[in-house]
Image 1 (cartoon, rainbow, N blue to C red):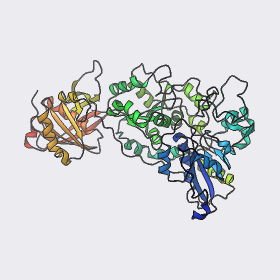
Image 2 (image 1 turned 60 degrees about the horizontal axis):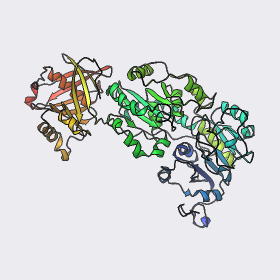
Image 3 (image 1 turned 90 degrees about the vertical axis):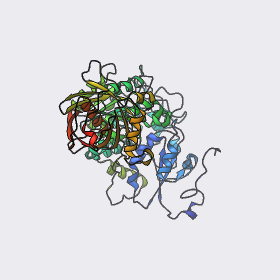
Length: 597
């Protein structure tokens, strides 16, 4: 064993383990992790072994993936005994489960079953060569198989070809889990030797999403999506030709993100990015945050690639994606999908995903963005047969997979029903826009129409003012801001409470006409330069960012409005609906409007 490898464990397996283990004679189930991506599918099926005192779970990493980051943290969170790969190969197990073909899997000492970690097996392989076993990146380790690609000109399909399924000319997999009979047909055509090892057992990832559809509104609220807003999810697989990649003929993302911030009004749209784990852990989470810093300051949500991506897809009004599995999952859930990067040649012809990507509507980054997204969100959902192509056994994967696993272990199934874990409710992650906003308003009586974005469309009608968060990266923007905004607890002693903070802002920034302290999702406190102090709130008939409410009050006061002592209600139009905003003066001086500056 190399000096950099962890030492072999001694409990519950290993030398002398019978002496130290409290529970003996358990069936051993080894989870084989290639990278964080494949681990996600193993996490899906882990609950199928819960509550069975006859089973000891173990975990190992093959070390064969180019994407090693994140595995250690994942193992620590799992809390299962971790076997170094060398020890894992030496340890007899009753069942090994992998969601990838990486590593020397034929050498595992026990029954081996392999799951797909996407929508079936759809990606083509690159021409054999470098020894990588990432889908689309190269061939399996030299010498691990004996079959060359077939005589046809098509490249073999990852996971459904002799290169991946045969060792010395015979199948080394005891169970190849497929989600649909069409995959069996493709397997029979290219590798008939492996058909007997195949089992159609559904898709646990998709089943968890199906079961969580009833919680869509909760998932939307977790992302801070307000009533009337449309959630646009940007999704990319890992690949130079994916949406996030720079090798698909055009590097889309660097130019697309600023345009989204400029063309999509902040109160009408919420943006989230669901990026493949290999992007996260290949380039590093810190690097992603660095690349997407400005977009996040404009309100983009970076979604956890393991624990929260499915919830974001369920919550979406439209997905802008590519040739990865997530686009197809979204379509199967009736979420409209626009394809921005089709990945020509990356998908096996004739697969459901390839057919979907070929026929799905395109996203054109050179045309106005808002109209495309609004048409997609309001139009016909993706092809109706998308769900039928994901799995032939919707909702049944838990039963089918547990039956398959226990058959391989030669162990009777538990009497309790096989159940998957419900998708968790993500942490509350509302947008925090610290980049400056240009606010366009039109006032008629007590009706205020408002639209906020990083830029104002050319020729747009209405008055414009600047609203800037105090945490902006650009201090110069604060010097010219009409409104300065902050969010937090109203009694924060570091700020002197909202009263102290707002008075300080008005004193320090002579150009600022209004200081706005957002103290919750439905309320804020406002101080004008003339000394007026107000509390703004929205009730059950409204759902609007309090900072937008404050901008509406600013526009109304600037247009000559006066707040009576009893207060008033403004009718603010944003996100295609009217939001009643209650304005209550907190000081006598609040009854008069600010003078023109």
